[in-house]
Length: 121
Image (tube, rainbow, N blue to C red; front, side, top):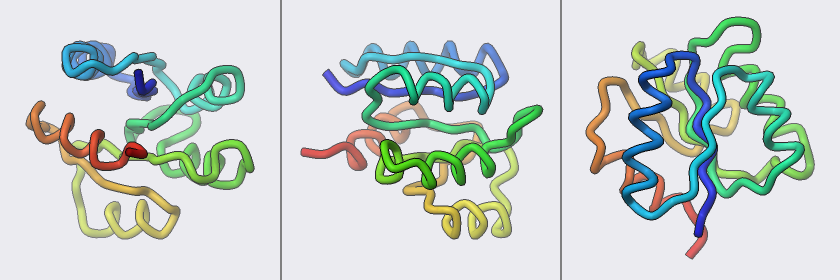
């Protein structure tokens, strides 16, 4: 069963995404910060990350940069989530190596399909 790490500082978003992805057959872990995400990735196998852009301390862009720098996680699929789906944010996420960019509010079925599309067959 693929393991998804959800990183969002809004508890309701993490909870809702967790429910959606568990119902779709994924194993899910939810953390509320970039720092917690990096710790989780260092200690637990993960197949894909859903990463919020706007978070305190370490934002999603910096978290993504650190994920890409680490040999163990450099090729891990990362889908960025944001309420501010500006072209500049999308371009910045892509330049840092994001695999996809999902705007909030999101369509649950779309999130599931995007996650499935980025997981190895």
